[in-house]
Every structure is written in structure tokens, then in C-alpha cells.
Image 1 (spheres, rainbow, N blue to C red):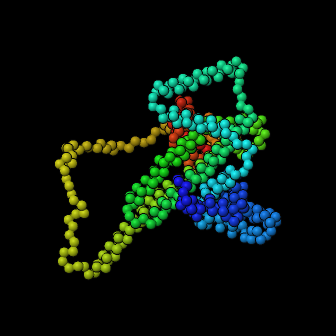
Image 2: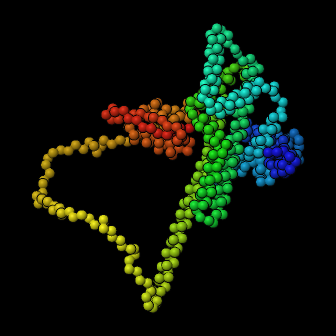
Image 3: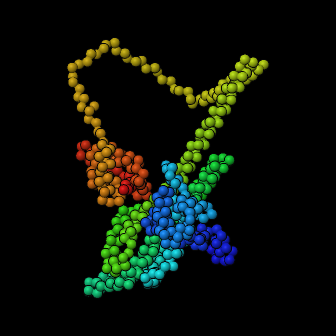
Length: 480
């Protein structure tokens, strides 16, 4: 986008971020929303709790600056901040709730991020960012290289550098990052981690805007159902196939890997134990930033799920309306028939030879087959005294669903999420396939459980005669 005079004038009038920067109570709004939403990474907050926190904030400000500095109540301020002409908060009702909730808009988060950049930093690191630029450029060049020989040459060069470094380490020459370099890289990690959370809110906003457009189209559509669905699915595919959609799904697939999550947790623990980082007194919430990413990504996934649910409800409503129209037509025919029952029309009213044409093809005639005479025995056999074992009637498998749920909950007490494969490794299957199906039923009824169709898992168990059985399932992840 070109920042010419017309563009900047339009942004100044219409963009919520610019309106926030020039608002009379801009410092109050920015400071309060930063402390309540951005610092703890809260995606939404109930109205009563937010009003209570803002009242406490206003109380302290009025004590310092006077009661006339902020004359209105917290509820009135929140209502103003969420109006369309401000656009700093999103006011909504979550699905299945009758309580009002608030969330930041992406524009507000951008404005607060810009204000954060104005504060004085301990130091401005440049080395790590320069290295990041070089690494990204190398990835782009190598990723676009189609010549196999050139790629092999580059890999051989990298291999030689690694071998040389291994030899230096074995010789006792170990190169270490000094404290300044460590703090420089940590500062960049913290900045990128926070920017990712901001990006998730913007991605969710884009999907929510698509959802709103779909609802508006469904409400005002007067054409054929097929044309509407074609247009809606075309828009959804366009977003999924866009650069933003592809990048989001690639990021989500990468983050959903349990191995990657464990690796991130281990790396963050080791980084925070470094003396150079401990001296910074860094925010400890960064240790669980990958879980914040997961929570933010789940909000985005739920928005997409609501879009699908809206389409399905539309199809159900259309089918109901079509059936209702047919019933009205049949009812009008019956009423008309009753009205002319006593005075039928004169002459030939209606002649129908048959309700449908009768078609008999030559090949439909069956071949001749002699009739089978049944053999009927006139003797009635009496039952003998042989005892028949009835154990099979009582030897039934009963899977205790509560026991399986307890297995899952025990594992989730020590970790934030666990896969079905890990549950079965800790608690082997006792009752075969029926027990596996019960685990799937528990996951289907759990709102926090995730079915990852892009990854599969192989599970094994022993049947009643000690034969090894196996099944291949989509990866099932239970979350705390």
C-alpha cells in the first residue's frame, strides 16, 4: 500500500488504531487493555469481570487526578469502546451463553504494539536480526533451487562446516555465545512470540468476517440454493488457499506435533536457566508461550467450525421450508377437492389410465424353473435330556466408560495434552476393539479433544486368545 496523502487521510478517519492513538482517554484505554488482555494473553473476558477491573482502575485514577477526570462509569466506557465508530473492543455472545463477553480487535492490538515500540529498550540488538535475514534468504534460495547438483554441493559444503566444528570441539575449542549475544537473541524470540499471538487474533478476525458475510448472504439470498453454496464454498476455499490460509495451516500442523511441543518446552526451560537470561528478569509466561499459541489457534479453529455449522443449519432450514411448501400444496389440493365433493364438475373431469406407465421388457421374463415340492414331516420330535451350556449368554463384555475416563484424567494431571496412543501405552487394552471404540466415543463427546486427520497412529492389543490385533486411526489428542 502506498502511503500517499489520500490513503493516510482515509486511515485517520476510519481506522480504529488511529482513532485510539488520538482519543482523549487513549492512555487509559491502551494501558488498561494491555494489562487485562495482552499481557496475560486473554482471548475473551466476561462483561461483569471486565467492568469490575475497570472500576478498580478508574478508582485509583480518580484519587490521583480528581473525580472529574473520568466522570462516567466503567460500563459506559466499555459500551463506548465497543461501538462501531470506535472499534477498540469486540462485544459478542459466545455460543451457548447468554452473558456478554469482550475481546480485543486486531486494530487495537496493532496500536498497543506500536506504543510498546516507543518505550525505551535496554538495548537494541542487531546481530541476531541480521543473521535471521541471512538465514531466511538462504532458505528462499535453496528452496527455489531446482538443480539437484547445486543442492548437493550446498549440502556437502554445510556438511564440511559441521565436520570442522566437530573437530574443533573435540580439540577443546568450544565457541560460546557471550551474554550480550544471548540477550540479543532472547529479545528477538520474545518479540516474535508476542507477534505470533497478535497474528492469531487477526487471522481469527478474518475468518469471523467471512462467517458474518456468509450469514448476511444466507439471510438475504433469494436465488437457488446451489448457487449460494457454490459462492460460499468458493470464498472459503479462496481463504484456505491464500498465503495467509496456507501459512496458518502449516503453522498449526507444525505446532500440533507432540514431539515439537516437548522440544519447545525443553528449549525454553534451558534458555531460562541461562545466567544471562536470568539477569534480564524476563516474563516467566514466555515459558508456556507455545500453549498460548495452541489456545489462540483453537479459537480460530472454532470460528471455522461455526462457519461449517452455519452452512449445515442453512441446508436443514432449506429442507424444512421445502417440505413445508409441499405440505401446503397438498393441503390446498385436499381443500379444493372437499369443496367440489358435493358438486363435481360436469363431463369428463379427469381420466388417468394408470399412475405410471407400465413397461415390460423381454429380458425381464424369468426362465422356467420347476416348482420345488416341500417335504413336510408329520412327526413331532420331542426334546431330549441333553443339557446345553448357557455360559455364552452370560459371557458378555462390559466396558467401564468411567474407568477409561479416569485413565485419561490421571495422565492429564501431569501434562497439558495426551494422545490416545499414549493412553493405551500407559493403560493397555483389556477388552479389545470395544474398549478402543469407547475411547473414541469419549473423545467425540469431549469439546477439548482433537481429531487430527493429517496424522495417523497405529495401536495394538491382544484378543481373548492372545492374538495380536492392530488398528490405524487418526491421531486423537485429549487436552486438559
